[in-house]
Amino acid sequence: MEFNPDTVRNEMVDFWAVATSPVAVNKFFHTVLSGWVLGAIFVVGVSAWFLLKKRHKEFALQSIKIGAIFGLVSTLLSAWTGDGSGYQVAKTQPMKLAAMEGYYEGREGAGLVAVGLLNPDKEKYNDGKDPFIFRVEIPQMLSLLAKRELNAFVPGVKDIIEGGYVQKDGTVALSAAEKIERGKKAIAALASYRSAKKEGNTATADSAYVTLQENMAYFGYGYIKDVHHLVPNVPITFYAFRIMVMLGFYFILFFAVVLFLVYKDKLAEMKWMHWIALLTIPLGYIAAEAGG
Image (cartoon, rainbow, N blue to C red; front, side):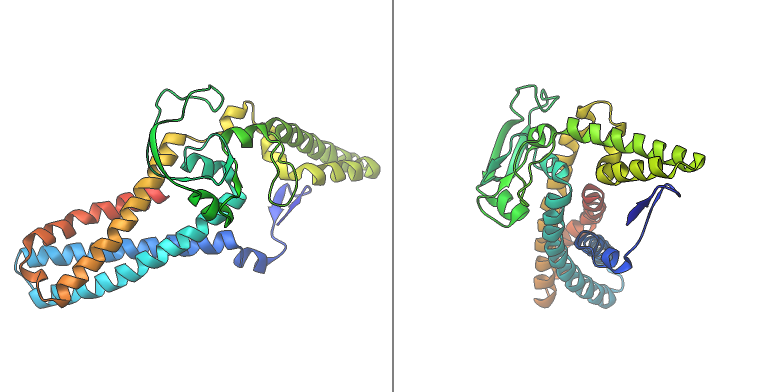
């Protein structure tokens, strides 16, 4: 897209760039596949209810078989697209990634937090308090997932706000304050452009347009009053992401066990498994919301 200062809106200039955007492709398929997982969980759970009530046994077992196969394949594909989506988040939304990991200080060879409890007393990125009460990390895994390199530097919240680190393309990251200033320049340039156009002052309009184009990428930052507003709610983002991931692994195990029991002709009489299938239905909705 390109910003059109005359209509004051972003206008698409390349449909195929939109349609084949790695961000859009990953998020689209991850979202659709997550819906399929939820649908499969619902089918298996409702079918298990029929088994509990000893009604339509053969139909219920066939529904469970189809639902579990569909669910297992969808969950595995969802995990794959989730990895791709995470990689794109690291490239285009580094602050979101930092919040997902409760990650305040960037470093090379960053570890992925497998299990952790955030420090509720930490309120700001620069308050000097440890962000975690405890955590267990998988060494270098975050660098691998985010940058596809074991020793790559992954910026934290503090790094993104303060800038100054070298990015993958070799440029030095701007600080939030610098982005805000550039955003204000873009806003002022837009106002100057529209005013000059209205007055028929072509030279001023052209100059303002150049300034606008140079700073357009930071336009939204011009409305930020406090850099702390750029930091999302870290606890919600951190825990929601882990709920989604943990439930995703649970669904893989759940569908695999259900299929095993179906093909062993044992599921029909296993009431405890019927109840697990029923109780898994709300977990599907929780996972979908946590991932959203």
